[in-house]
Length: 117
Length: 145
Length: 338
Image: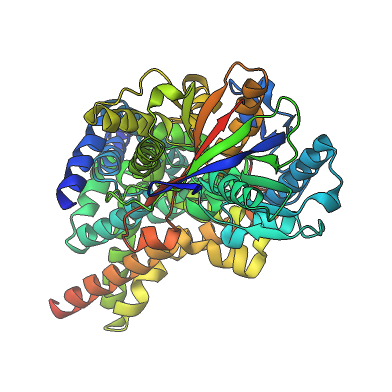
């Protein structure tokens, strides 16, 4: 059952992205920004966690999940550290994803070359 | 002239073929869904190994990012993207691809101003505006506590 | 008698000979419908170099050398090279010819560069300022994507109106030495920069079509001829979308172009099997189609009078990011077997 929910919720989030790309000429690069920001806002209102508890990876894997992670991080950090958490919480929560992307991309660039199309 | 321009604009809209929205959405749906299912499978496997939920989710992201970047290196991710569209942009693998692709492309410009700087041409704005949003969320949360 | 006719055109007193042509294309173009007409088809787009930009310069250099060799003109008798490309600061051309020691004119007309180069070369020769001029234009798909769009490995979809930049270089040598069986340049019409307010960078055909229409229309007016004068009227890289728009614009003027109007971007790729959407584009699109296909058709007398109209979209990445509209330009060159 969790696979089915992950599939359709994840699919629907991607379809929303596709409609935005095709209908509004928003480029895919802007979609990335938009979705992370939306996820962060929904996370701020505690809405996105509800979606994750229903759809699991279907909501956590798409980019709003990353934004939600930042929002949650900020709130947890404020709870434990006070006002400084406003500045430290977000990126701390996103650190794993960002660091992984940077380090793997760097290694990747050492090994591979772009292929002609 | 302004008249001509809007008339021409209409002519262009009529003459330019549209994307097949239904087919694109269908492809985005199943491919995006499939990536999430793979994510769910990784999370479930980690949970079975005895990891707690939060660690499992973090590791799932890291593994998917690794896969996305590896497929970018092999020149496969853009081929997937041609069919999947948003289905391969919106999942975290799409973010990974957006970091890895420019890093690879600008390799010839060196590791500082090429790879190091260009890595963030797409991911940079994502990080900037998600950080900004998280700070705003934090301020509101702090004040409303 | 004045050589200048009407507002934008020039009729040459002594039509300039195109004495040779040479063309090089990348592997994708080599799988396209015009493959048999190209002199060299590269096995890969890197051409033995380590970057796309260096590869483009290598292609330019090799094709220029091939054209010079074919013409049998000693290099010191080539008075000028006129060349341009899409890379920043025209480096595709300048790096290619840095060891040539031929006086050089670097030009930029975006994808219309080849037409601009032929026009300027013809004027210089007809004016008596040169005897032999080497003209070329080049583009490279991977280098253009990197400069103008997104990294190659980024997973994005191409819209149906987008075009595919041709990898290659087309060269010709213009001369006042009239050899046997040489097509001649009889007239040119210089385009105006025309902007009809198109902003979609994935619809270059639509951005350039008004310029193509304007140049061709004024060519007819200035020289007092109609489309039936030519066996073929062929624009540079409007693709299917732009081609259709040009036909519609002429239709509104009650001029029928349906019978003899085509576009290089439609000929160079097979849109059904090659995934090139609206067609080919880039400086090389018109340059290799002329230097390969059209020049040979003229020599074989399968075509005797053509109006060749390379088209260019005059935008930069910066102008697009600043929300500017995309102006277009087109240069018409009349080439005939006399």
